[in-house]
Image (cartoon, rainbow, N blue to C red; front, side, top):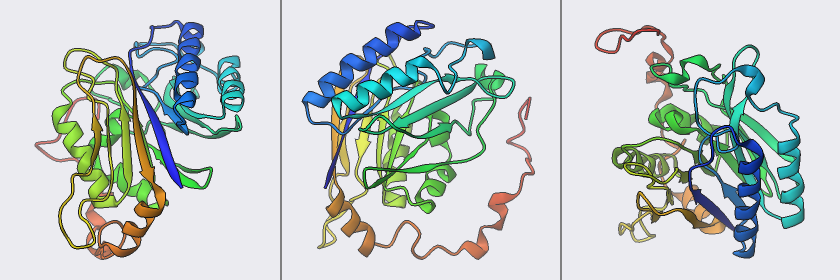
Length: 279
């Protein structure tokens, strides 16, 4: 079994939701023609990543636009990770819907680590990391700032994720790309990120968890790394049989962790030098 992920490196149109959905469908068609299983979009592609946004202007879970993407997924036989600002209880959330090849919404994930130090402080954060079964493959999602925290990928791994898909929209990508390679290595999971193109942006990428062969010889786990400016589709293929075999024999992930020493990770006390406004 091979999972082929199509990755869109492109900036969408702010507040032009219908136009953005048409753009998504056009790329779904191209990805389907290239035998991709699922299309990964950058962060908040349907709505555009522009803040602030009022709750009434965010996307409803039962929006006709989501239904349109579900219909397209069924027709084209390709999944899609549809991203948008969505309606929360009182303020919007930053969310991703995983839609499978039959047009079913498998899960909605809302960004846990909202950027409360910046414009995203107006958003309602999610409170749970989620994993779904995408045609026999366990997929998790973390959105942009989520990937700055190793706990995000770790929890997804503990929940059974084999592949993590990362909708993203930010710059200064070099250390962030390196961190994604590490997340793949330490959790023995595949990771794919989509970021809009642009100066100091782009760098959409994919990493395999496989970092050495059966003889212990190191191999490059990078599947692809885009440049900053090129707009369009990139592809990452994961041989799930090979990936699962590696996870069954190697010693990272949830193998020899000493969890009795991890209690401090759940403490909510914040001390200098990490004290910030609005915490």
